[in-house]
Image 1 (cartoon, rainbow, N blue to C red):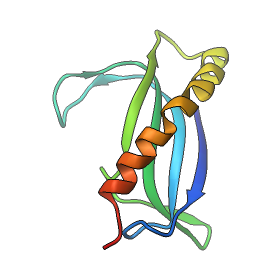
Image 2 (image 1 turned 90 degrees about the horizontal axis):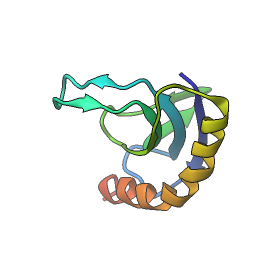
Image 3 (image 1 turned 90 degrees about the vertical axis):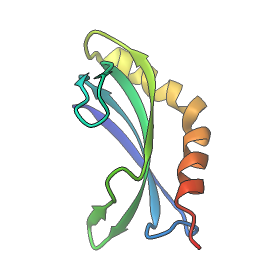
Image 4 (image 1 turned 30 degrees about the vertical axis):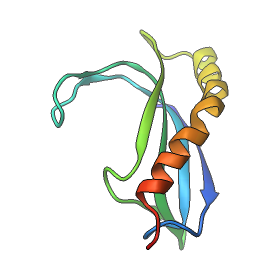
Length: 104
């Protein structure tokens, strides 16, 4: 699976030091936790992480993701297009994750 990630340092998160923002290709398929089917395509995801001592750790189910567009297969050209499209949705996902992980 191809992934493009970047990290933003934040000091207002509960049990996290950074936000990981990534664009990735997901082959999709059945979702056994929620039911239904996950569409195959390119996704933007944001999750709170803790970086330190050469490691990155995170809590499961603490972030959120957004389907940028569906596709039948991976291509480098579409991946570059997904990275460009992600800028339009980053702020919305960052606000969602920060509001749900605010430090008390």
